[in-house]
Length: 395
Ligand SMILES: Cc1cc2nc3c(=O)[nH]c(=O)nc-3n(C[C@H](O)[C@H](O)[C@H](O)COP(=O)(O)OP(=O)(O)OC[C@H]3O[C@@H](n4cnc5c(N)ncnc54)[C@H](O)[C@@H]3O)c2cc1C
Image (tube, rainbow, N blue to C red; front, side, top):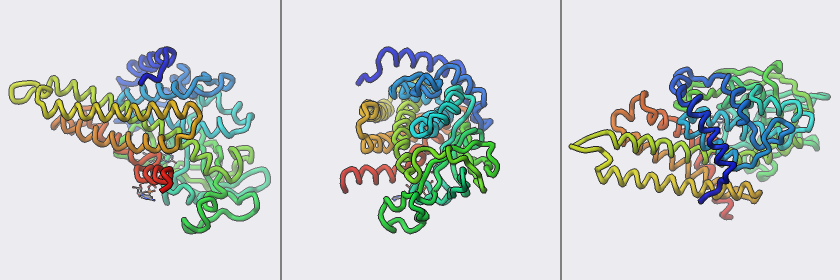
């Protein structure tokens, strides 16, 4: 299935050139340092890679979602899943809250610097007490004159150490004056539990906001992940994004984009791992010939290639549906589930095909194995995807 036109392919060439020259040579060093250098952001901004779908008047390129898809594929094909994720968070998971629901004044104030890579974004929904159950968030916002006062903490926040702007989910008193519910999941139905959740834009330098700690992770090590603390953080009321109390639906809307982006990342990362593995089995000899001559190895690679191709078709077909504006919740959840689980199988088998070298840090396949483990957890776990799919099937 061909979903990209000539313009998309031209854009792909420019992203690929950047990745080959300015990303690939540095991946190992960034992973070791546990940090992507800050300078990569203004550089990507200069090249027009950040905020490709945003209107030109805000510094974007006014392009379509398929252009974003190309960017995701090429970033992930670099073998630097950390950077692909960090960029995805900035452009597809955090800043859409501003673009879709922020006031004109806020958009004019922040978007040009977001697109230029001068301001880095993070999305802060998950809390130490839980991530899957978004409706259970405990961070609180209390209105005080022309401000809201935020208190609470957030966990596992990508770009959290370095970000300048945080898009924060907090529960506020609802417009009718009732406190948002804290109760059991089935207290008074789902809508009751969602009530009060709202999205805020918080600048890093706001007093009371602190990065409590940088977290030490299994994979995606060049992407920083933080725990955040909010203690009497005063946010101007105009930094409330969208409508008070309906932030849950805003979060769910952006999750659709996030999960599709995760699918694109998984497929392209697997493409790269398969290519590396094919090259390896061609040059590695055992029992008098290259590994690639052994039927069991050829068949294993054929199985993996078929799996990845199935993941690509599902993902691309869903990208087209999403771009067309149709409801694609079921398909997007399937993309997230299928490609995340696919990546586990590809990672396991590709390490196996590398033998002992697959276990060594000097081989990118070892990093791929660790990085891909996140795919079934971040952005909504496989179990939660199954729940959503089952609900969509009216089960
Ligand atoms: C590296 C990394 C980066 C992340 N980046 C961000 C970020 O930038 N912003 C952000 O807000 N969050 C981020 N997250 C958080 C991520 O979205 C959550 O980890 C994820 O949603 C799962 O939440 P949890 O970790 O609290 O697990 P839990 O919700 O505690 O779940 C634990 C286990 O129970 C299962 N489970 C839970 N509920 C059910 C159920 N109803 N039925 C069956 N099984 C269930 C889950 O599937 C999981 O296997 C990140 C996480 C990681 C690890």
